[in-house]
Length: 200
Image (cartoon, rainbow, N blue to C red; front, side):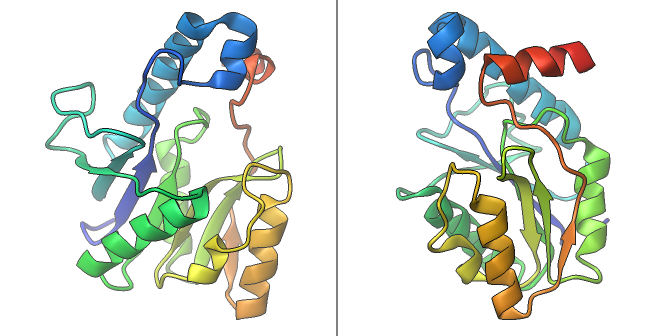
């Protein structure tokens, strides 16, 4: 893997009352924030040793001298808009630096996403136009591409069980070859978290 490989990480600022609201609905804000901090810790440990450029996109404010090493992670902020617009903007921003180089984007809700799977995604982009890691709830935990296909981020029913199917349909319309990674679980609610804890 080379420094022309680019990993984009989307996180939400860990703020009490704003982190993992679906988990907070059953366990309370403080416990939900503690769980989200553990999810962020998993992302850090699973990405810090990958040999690539790393871009950390905060949801609200860029934080310096936090748990994310300012040297390891280039810190940026997500633009306003729906999730598709946020992701497309990040891909375009990184593509300006490394035109048509491998770019992979992940979130912070999938602690089962290991460094090996991220490296599988980069490997897949040697032979495919795009790569995607589906989740059991119908979404995806990872999307990657060399060239930026803006159509994959437009007119998608975000945060629904249709996301993966709609994205794949758009890729098919484009004639875009897509590698599929192993299916994993996102952590969206307390039941997801408890199931993940049991499987560790």
